[in-house]
Image 1 (tube, chains in turn green, blue):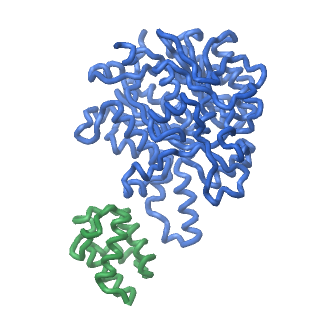
Image 2 (image 1 turned 120 degrees about the vertical axis):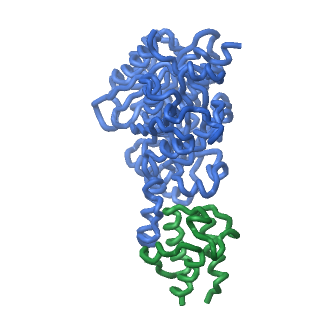
Image 3 (image 1 turned 45 degrees about the vertical axis):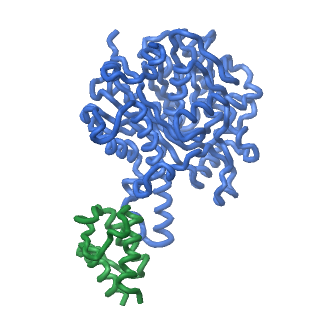
Length: 81
Length: 421
């Protein structure tokens, strides 16, 4: 079972790959749109890539509630449990 | 004279001969071939395994995140447009002084975002619909290059995408000329881009019997007007012009390469693939371009032929050149596809660039591989680099496309900066 930090770190790599945000900036308290400037289509790409990376399903209706990096990490932790 | 003089102030390109205009032009004048074997595994079993491939990988030029949001054809267009824009003496953002509402783009492609279309279909089949990129549509659409360049330059007088197969980017340049002469823009970023070196299009052209199978001698495969030609060689790349009114260019003291003097467009209404063998419709495009440019046939000292190295196309074009310019024309003809391969929607712009630079530098690049000219062509084809005389010069670039599209554009060395010193 991956730790919270491992999930955050892997997610940060995805955000960097998709949106070019420095991985170190992708911290739990950061908002994807307000702090990291991730646009809506990039967010969709990040969700899809996260599903593949972590082997979880993130339905669209859940994805829209993932405002911060911490929201996403917590969702992935629960879904993978 | 009522026509608004339109000049070329910037050029940009990434081609099988170089990653910029300077290297592309130098290698063209030197008669070098940009055609090479396709090394990818997928090519091994195809009938045609050669192509004019880029010298500089776009990944070396563009930001990684920017690049992954663009199909390769749009990447090449942006690279060439950025070069052209800087070459014209303009900058980006706050350093861009052009009135946004008087700035347009006109950038064509023959096919569009084929790598994205086919690549995402592969992903959907293999991994499921959930893995398809949400950027698929804005990446594959044919207008993506014109739109992406307009976004980067803030061009708000329209982002246009003419599509006419291999005549596309001459049509885009002609449309840019129209936009300026109709008073709809002062500056137009115009040209074309194509990138379809992918197993499906390569094979589909082979299935048409349209492409050369001289796989063992890639550099000898594209041989326009030669008796032993056996089809065209696919190429990829982009070429972009900055067009503006003479008044606009002179007001800012811009460097000027020459004048885009006129354009002519006709359609064969004959066959979806074969050119009208009479050459009349192609010739009429040249005649219209001359008329619009207020030039006489005898003024034309140089023609960059469409000449793709196909058995039927090249002789038809020789006929059309003689029809338009006269049997006694002294124009030096060249076919630079012998070196670059056929860039499809990028061909017109690249060869228009070659035409303009030939007038500017007063040297016509050679047609390589023309060892045994097809008999009876009746035109003077340069097989080595040939000098052009001093004084006023005018030239024509032809582009013809599947569907019977014929677009000729005429350039002169009027207003060229190097004539005023």
